Image 1 (spheres, helix red, strand yellow):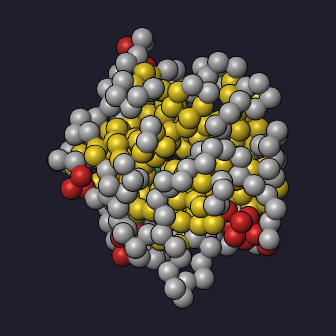
Image 2: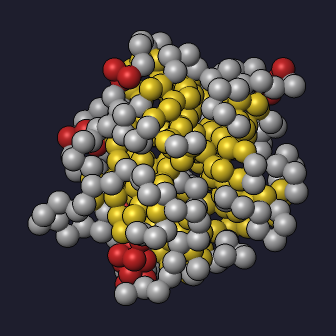
Length: 327
Ligand code: BMA
């Protein structure tokens, strides 16, 4: 058994369901999936690829809600148990000092990261094509927007939850304006969350489920042996893209160095709500909660670009799997 430990505060109220009898998978699905459907917000086409963090005595989140005009928008939400959500009917209106940057075009695939004194939000922000929007909130009521992190085109901007070597740190995935048939994960640093540089290559697609493109998923989880990164990978089948997810362990001080990386996926589209929807065959993780004393991990992921789902793992088992099945 791995002796690695998660570094971080305990979360005794983490959403949790034990592995179903007879299931041998390292990551298993909630019996309550999908936990969020379009009914949660009026005039909404789909609620998926969304991010959740512990907040006060419950949870808060930023949700991707595509409306019935098919505009991709971010909405804030609150929950006592991480399963039942109250999502604001109006999209988040970021306050921004710069009208050009603050001008709303579209926003999707949010990540939320508690870092020092506030909750940062990163998302895919429309600015002459997709790039990484950056904002923050203290209360999930008022949101402030900062400069975009990178030039277009880029997606899957994911912050590390603490400074590394004195700098803010972010993973991202340079892309194109469309449905990008390529994609590597890169690492960048910033002294001020505005200017980003020191770009380093982290990993490229390899065979199988991660052969076309890869992208960082939830905020990396700090452990005594490295950053635990859950990431999505895409395979191009004769019927289009298939999105699965796996995990990697990145060096703590030089996170562009990959220590382990799963050859098999951890979860792939199998259930009806993952295989049938606006975009079939997609599981897309954007958040993970963890409780260090019990090793419980709860992963939030989008199903088929339509609904929001939950899956679970035990940290020790996940680490053993990553080490025992590494590329
Ligand atoms: C990606 C993003 C995700 C989406 C996925 C599958 O490029 O747009 O939001 O889940 O495609 O359609």
